[in-house]
View 1 (cartoon, rainbow, N blue to C red):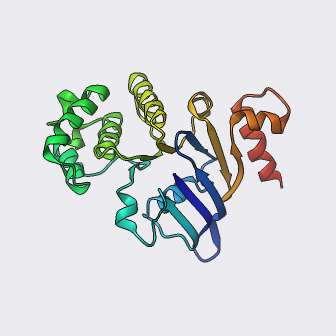
View 2: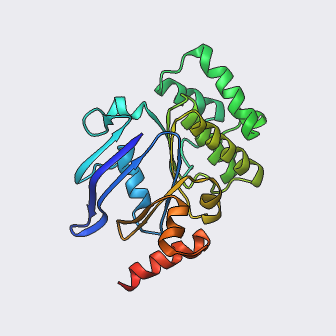
Length: 244
């Protein structure tokens, strides 16, 4: 579970990137995080993961405060950032072993996990190549594999489908469903509203640093009293906010 309570973040003196938001991401549900560019999605995810400190409020991962017990909290989750261009001079297998070392995954556990992830993502033949030789999609897959190597109970993914081919996107979506079927936590941002509509049990919509809506897509339809697509409802919410 992720608990975000009255969290704010300001940049440049007075620009509020995130404005007093509160969210509870429960176990056993896929929760999508939606919003236009610059709405505050990535800033929120970076505060949840401890990359950025919040100016006020608190964030707990499985009941552990990320500010007070950062190491313990960070062991609870796997995080995929919005840019997979990292550790480019390492070979894929070196990166995965590095991530396994960071998360203290035992030698006897890491090999079967790496083998399983490599097979699922079609990366078996690429593991001994340098990451800088990978395509964007392959870099995305190796970062996903590294984030999941310690089998975290909480997945936090920032635009995880970007650059993935259709087969890999399908596999990731299946893995996401498997994860929450074990009563675990999944929070991910996406620009692809069709993906959110198909796999999310709930969505949180943010704009100008504020949460405009949080609930199921069915709740949104009740709110709009119409059988609209998520895309139409999202655009109407955001446009109303811009017009306000």
